[in-house]
Length: 331
Image (tube, rainbow, N blue to C red; front, top):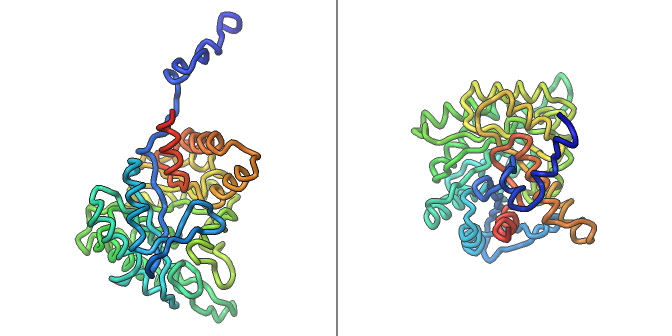
């Protein structure tokens, strides 16, 4: 049957009708809000390239957590900006590391808040890479050594779990990282702590503002030898499959906006909860265009995040989380 018997506009005639037949929804339960914590006191500093996003010292964290909690956001993703960096990123797994301190702080005051700990070394190393750097004599250059990096990442994950992290989120893209972390967590008695793997993380141009925020820009080269080529989809499925076999509890695609097809591919191939990371440049571009008056920020953000959900994401990590909740409450 076709027009005039079939009239698609019948189901668009009113707001109530559109709500009734809506296929994809967005709610506060879908959202994880990233937080940047740092050493020092009295610090609440806006990140220049990310309007509305701040570095917080622990003594200023209450004002942010109180707002997050009042909005009903149930999960935060912690990124630490340390005062000390070295070649192995030892402050990443120190008992008094900034992520560990912030985790304990949050869990003491907001025990029901889910703390997701980013598990990587790049913010904590003086070279800005996500693993151990060694000199490759044959190639005459510095390279990231995969297997020794796994040991440090596993130590970091265990230290975060000991501090009270509810979810470990390794973002390093070393081969075998999920298996190494799962084994270390289990051995340390944290069998109950799930792993939210950055399974399909691309060597993307969309990370620029985040690297300013986390002070994690590589001091030499780039991350293309361990993060994925933006041209590849099938490789992403292989990466995700390896993580599933190694014990991942969540899969993630990062970035999200230019990788909707990858989100869809993972949704079709795996049955684990799927996370889309709406990354820093995706946030900053919208903020900049809205500031110029070129776009309707609310409309663009909601459409963008619905697109990620429509592609297959179950969970969204987004710097827009607080704004989204307010907009949802407005109706």
